[in-house]
Length: 277
Image 1 (cartoon, rainbow, N blue to C red):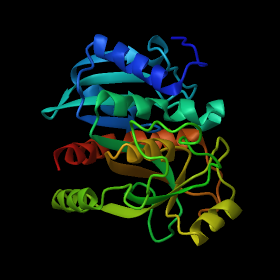
Image 2: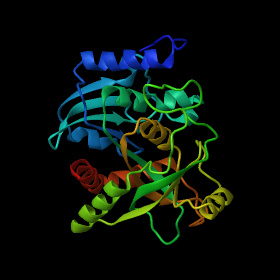
Image 3: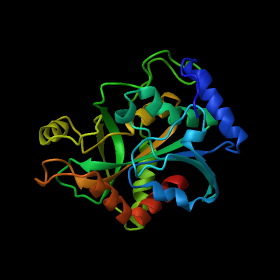
């Protein structure tokens, strides 16, 4: 739904939040942002309220085929959750405000815990594709930041600290809960490149040198916004493939989607535990 983009950002966010509230999205406790190939999790919500991004003022659906472009709201495991089934990536619009806008709306709706997921390329050669990684920290290689511009003082400080972005206590609890179910969760650093081209082997070597364990094209903008507002954040990367140059073979988007479909049940288990801890 079109909106006047010349209006102040806080007014636009308020308009979107009020619209969603009027449609029945009331006080969600947890916000889940689903990454590439992981959108099927949204089907687990019972009696869901489903809204297309294109029908919501201030939002629009992205163009990536395996991202649904839907807001799904309902109750799951006893909690009110709002799910963003799909992203509008930075590489689609060159506008970090648009990329981070859904996270800003979640903050305005009162979400206390963010579960931000993605499919990522595995940089750490001691690990393997098909595993899951909890994000312990990130490296922003996008060259941009969603907090550039006028600060929304009512939401958070001008210069937010990023030291504890990904909640350590929650990570420890989630690792323990997953291990009890025989699921191994790695912990590591996620580096965001802009995309849409996959990284070159040289860029992957660079990422490894500066401390990255996985790479992708998302997550960081939403995490910055949630952290700015002082919300709990759990970041989950599905390591869908080994990054460029590790196995000396070309990469495709289809490979990422197919790998995600194979682990959708295990992914759901991990998200379930992230909701319960």
